[in-house]
Length: 347
Image 1 (tube, helix red, strand yellow):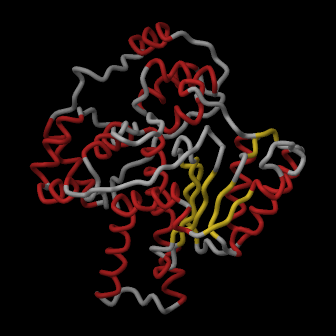
Image 2 (cartoon, one colour):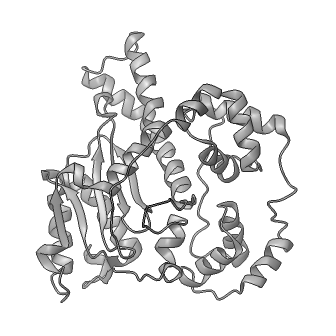
């Protein structure tokens, strides 16, 4: 899969202010949101006007700098061949601008997609999704975790977590299994180490793969005195009730699953893959697991920086997941996580 797209790389906590501004600008954040990230995430106070001046000095601009139309069309066609044929124009616009080095307006991408893949545009426009009411008061109020088994027949398992308030993807990893409690718990421990906080509540399906996460969550929350501390800080139930993560899987299907599932099925039909042979499955993991993880990283970065629109007759917060998660005060909310009551080295 030559000349594939690459997820935008985070410059690191030690990056200069210029590098951070360029990173967040490329991720399509506004100057106000960039100033918020610098303050709340990096402890750097920079006014919105200063951000504008820095963007001008760094020659970062969104208007009047559109790439040639032929480059935009060629890149869209290339992305279609790489598994992005079922996504809408907003998602395509996001990938082009943040991962491919292409500057394009949403209107240009919309018209180009309609010309390139008209049938796909019509099919997506007819879809109707009715959502039930969901209530979540702030970041880390409830973290939803689950496994995703659509590629399991081909030796690849996915596990993910999403914040219920902001819809920010916490982790999205591919491995040889999502049923081993140790493998699943590594994702949770890495999240705790990075955030240095423990969420108020973790929600999962009933299953043995979550027993270590359950023990860690209950142990870390045992010393707190709120009404959801201790055993109440971990909730199990049917997958149909784990709404936020199930919503994520429904979006992941056209962005990611369809391409890989069809490719592996074609390999089986052509006699190139026998998915009942453990050696073949190990070869699939060896050859494709890094590429699949890169595909998931691109989806995660795109999702966390895309703008969730308001909807009629739906009472929920809307905005950019990364902004809602890191800057909850903008949405009259607070972070519901708690301090970890032990040294980080113990985790």
